[in-house]
Amino acid sequence: MATGSRILVTGGAGFIGSHLVDALLARGDEVVVLDNFSTGKHENLAQHAGNSAFELIEGDIRDFDLCRRAVAGCAGVFHEAALGSVPRSMADPRLTLENNVQGFANVIEAARRAGVRRFVYASSSSVYGDDPRQPKREEFIGKPLSPYAYSKRSDEETAALYRGVFGFSSVGLRYFNVFGARQDPEGAYAAVIPKFASALIRRESPRINGDGSFSRDFTYVANVVRANLLAFEAKDTGASDRFYNIACGERTTLNELFLLLRNELSVFDPAIASVEAVRGPERAGDIPHSLAAIDKAARELGYRPECGVREGLRLSARWYWETLR
Image 1 (cartoon, rainbow, N blue to C red):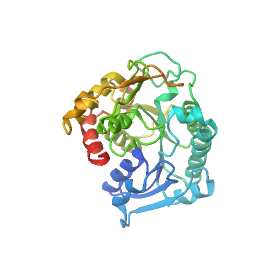
Image 2 (cartoon, rainbow, N blue to C red; image 1 turned 60 degrees about the vertical axis):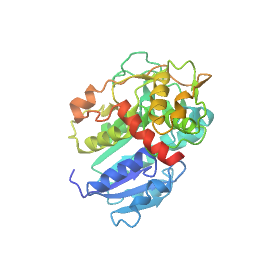
Image 3 (cartoon, rainbow, N blue to C red; image 1 turned 180 degrees about the vertical axis):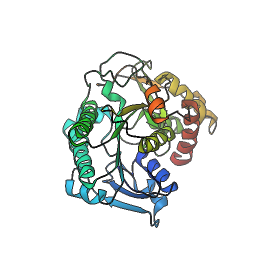
Image 4 (cartoon, rainbow, N blue to C red; image 1 turned 120 degrees about the vertical axis):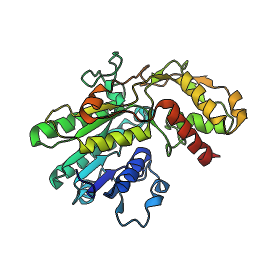
């Protein structure tokens, strides 16, 4: 799809969405952001104030009429809006399902009615549920272990239904533990890397849930933005299973992650090197290990992770140090 298109980014004030907005505007697209700022931040988009190619609509994807207005005239949609976090979904399943299932249905239906040519949406590694196989491959999924996981699996099924029944093309990207600048360290449902960073910068001990042996395929945000743009440009093969793992293809335990991040932050404050982690209980709904096979995304999208975990942590550590002190 040619640059200079009008593009809707739902959740564009959020961590991943705002990086995507930056990239789209940089390549010459006209960008509309729809965000209710429940988790997004105005400062994530402040650099685009006054840009005639940028429009911000403050509102909720649970409002179908607003979704229709936001997508009007758009050639493409990046659907990033969602309530993330497994623990949040365990604490309030209804709110997660309202946003992630009904909200998704509103956005994809509004996009279909508007004649959008390409629809790219954020799915999640959580859809693999209780399937024990490693690495995770797109064709093998298990039973969901949380309302959040169920909501993302439901989105994929809705997208497949729209392709089969209406011929509406979409691409789903199963993100694996994305991290980087602008990821919020505050609140009960913050992701592990910003929470670790925030505590370490204060010279306080971060908490590791369990014994630290649980592992994840941590993925720097620039890789995810690149994957979205590749999905946006990819030729439609007509396949019904248009979803892909987006990750680095590397497994890092929580213990390893803590040591790597502590090492990067101690460059700025040597006292951080002596901070030790404390242990807490395992979180309900968490899976022990998650490692992605990324060969399908490489083959069909041309995706390759351009920034590994160590380099991503170095870049993230600098941002957290400059932002949180």
